[in-house]
Structures are given as C-alpha cells and as structure tokens.
Image (cartoon, rainbow, N blue to C red; front, side):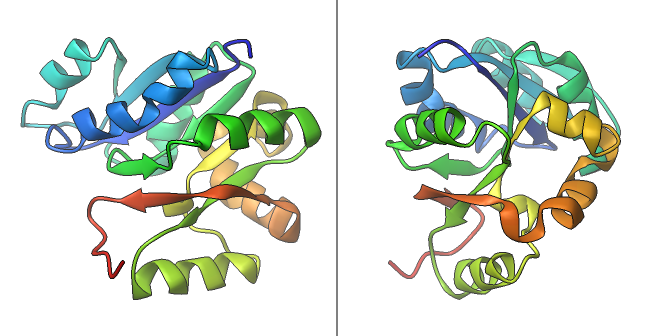
Length: 183
C-alpha cells in the first residue's frame, strides 16, 4: 500500500488519550498506509501540544469546534484520503486492511467505523444504519468528496445528507476511551 491517508485528530485537552490513539494507528503506519498525523487543537491547556510533538504530529491551532478543526486538518492534509477520528479513538488492529480494501473497491464512497462497546455504541450504530452517522464513528473521505460537499467545514453535515445510505461501514470496530464498555 502507498501512503494515501492523512489522519486528522481534533483535540482539546487530549494528552491522556493521544498516546493510546497513536498506538492504535501504528498498524496503518507499518502498512505504509498513513502519510501523516495532523492534530487540530481547540485550545488545550494540558500537555496535548507536547504529546503531539513527541508523536511527530503536525500541529494546528483552531477554534474548539469540530467543523473548524476538520477544515484546518483537511486544508493541511497532503494525502488523497482523509481519516477524521476523535482523539480517544481506538480502531481495531485490522483497520489498515479494511481501509485499504475500502479505498480499492469503493474509491467514490466515504466510510465510517462501527462503534464497539455498550448501549451508547449500539444506539449510535442503529442511528447510523438509519442514515444519521455521528462524528464518533470516524469518517474516511476522499478529498474530492469534501470539495463536492462544499468544503471541509461543511463536510460532515453535507456528506451525511448527500451520502446517507451510501456511506460504507468498515468491517472492523472502533472503540472510544470516553465510552464505557460492556464487553
């Protein structure tokens, strides 16, 4: 695989979560899939800047609002595909194979993860199946899809409206630190 993905992590006081998230993303780096890690911070007052620097992430200061953070990350991204994840996201170790297969077989479609965990994950997965995915699912999107949706700042809402039932579900789970697990 060639390095086709820029990973964008919106953060705000995420120093506690970033190292584990970076560890969960390492299989993508090892597979040669990840080109860069971009941290778009909304004004952290903890050690988030130092942790991001230690991880080798590209740093961007932005407003503490997901659309602005996503827009800043997308503008800085150099890869053809952008993966937006929360700073506490833990994709399954098999995520590079699932993402690589998706990009090869569905180059014109966005994708999201299936959340793993308890009742909240189940409710959010049901909602997504009904055409209303949540940013907690993550978003894998091709750059031209962002442009077609009106730019990165509008991307999540616009893509959700445009793609509703056409957004693919990656066959690997995503767990969030802030989400209690019943498994």
